[in-house]
Amino acid sequence: MTRLRAAGLVLAAPVVAFGFALAVTLVILALARVDPLAVLGDALAYGLRPVTLVAVANKAIPYYLAGIAAAVGFHLRLFNIGIDGQYRLGAFAAAVIGAAVSLPAPLHVALVVVVAMAVGWGWAAVAGLLYVRRGVNVVISTIMLNAVASGLIAWLLSPARLAQQAAGSNNVTTATIPPSGWIPSIAIPGVEGAGAAVNGFVFVAIAVGIGYWLVLHRSTVGFEVRAMGLSGRAAKVAGIRAPRLALLTMAASGAIAGLVGLPQLLGASHRFGLDFPSGLAFTGLSVAILGRNHPLGVAFGAFAWAFIERSAQVLDLAGVSREVVTILQAVTVLAIVVAYELVRRIRARQERRYVARAVGGASGVTV
Image 1 (cartoon, rainbow, N blue to C red):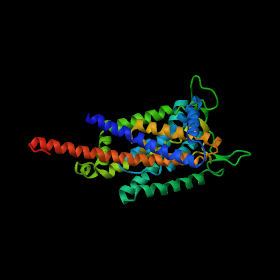
Image 2: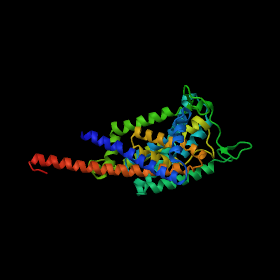
Image 3: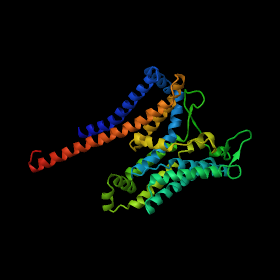
Image 4: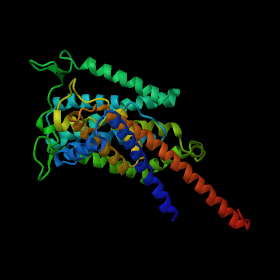
């Protein structure tokens, strides 16, 4: 019964949080002088269309990878705000090298993936070294490194260096990766129309989630990370080397972050340009919070986040600003943080009562 009650509290937290966020959204829609239930009903109907669900799945893949990258740091209480710079720099380097070589398809794709992970790993390791060697706050260093990465990409992405400009276009891009470096999409039976196939990088994302869980729960390093996250002082007393662990964690987070841009690079654009997606760092952090750093929870959070964004396209037809979606997402994250904190306090209170009763029963004293 105790385990069932604890599981019920954990499951109830996101449900209550989302319900509260939905109630706030209904109030905002009512203030906008539209029928809240009708608008949300239209958005839900649009989001549940098979073609829309495929688009949601494709949108959720980079969100999931960004969420796993953030979750790796969260376990050690390190906020990797630099995911954006790490994945953009990794995708840029992968696009340049991927376009410069000609290999058999599996080797070509593998090379692009390794390059992206290596660059993301190295860029995050800079923040890790600054934290370990000089005590520089990870949040500050990763934000600054995002700016450095953006400037570096802007300098290299020019026709005079590593890019080219198509005739009649203002978009500057790297050379196109040959077809041997593409990841094919997966056609879904019964779904027709543009974008009716799932990005093949979904299998890489699944492998990343499985690997993340195995390392965290079936390896010595994973045990040390969880121990350090629960109690840094106790972990140090047990002989766990905190600086080494922090550096490894940041580097691993960066390596996974390097994969975030590859669904777009290998499955859609096949080149890196000025229009390459950006700003996924805070999405990854939010998705990791929603999913409680668990690979399945992060997958649910990524899909829900993408579903809300995709369904918001109906709001334009109703004359409602899309900023309502941003409000819904922000309130959901805030509400779920508060809900999980309340769950933590309730469970701590229950544990104290259980210990007090056990001690009282063992000593013959009524508590």
